[in-house]
Length: 238
Image (cartoon, rainbow, N blue to C red; front, side):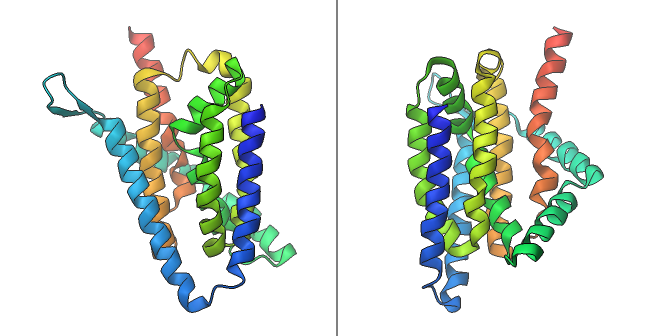
């Protein structure tokens, strides 16, 4: 669990440093920083989707796969999220926190940062390695990246970014504790499928940073589990 806790502390510290920097940033510059961060997150998302969906053949040709699964996952996952009203429930909880502690914009920073930190192969593989064989290298590397990103995010989105350390520790800690089971399950094509759906959601997060929350990303989160269900059905049929 050392790697998981290390990542959590890195996220927390980056949020604190970002908040200290935020105090010295004029509001006229704040919008420009958010746009820049939005573009950076979108580029990261595109890179993640492309790298997981496109493979290089033995003859050097490019082959793509998973487009239909991506569309179906986003459609079904978003439908489930809308039915369950996940974003409304989170906004209600966050609204109470904002009202009680007078923290403006808590939800936006919290959701944005949590999505970026938790979605991706490094979080999954790093947590499995940490829990299964005590290898924390991937999570430590991820922590360094999260630390740099977290400073900029907190400087533009506020205190909600700092509290993203909670879902990071819970998410990665759960994977680490279940590493023995997940190491034989979240591998190969399934891991690739989960990752490219996840990176598509990160792209929506980036657009939200730039466009004042046009996408209900929380309602789209069930999309990540659709490839797992699809994989389970294939296993039963085979």
